[in-house]
Image (cartoon, rainbow, N blue to C red; front, side, top):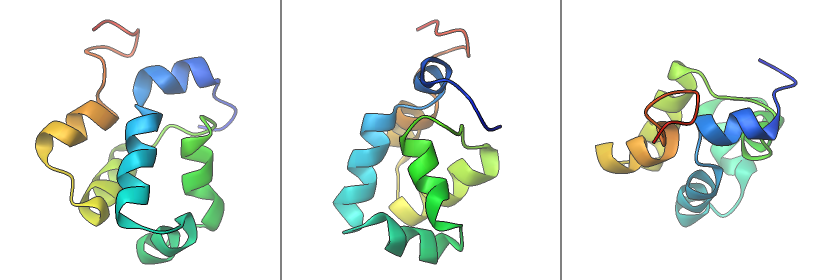
Length: 86
């Protein structure tokens, strides 16, 4: 899903909460990328709104960040629908 606009991504993922969760646990993105065995730019693309993570990506990130279910919902399901409904 490349070339996705920030508007669509912002509806799908709460980027600021995700960024906070990442930097709360990791000092930089490359350490997290290595642990996930992802290409280094994948997390950057998510945080820059260029890529919407799929279900597997969300699950892997959640596991590495030790997210509880409430925080997971706030980050990866911030809206009831992909149309931005709250």
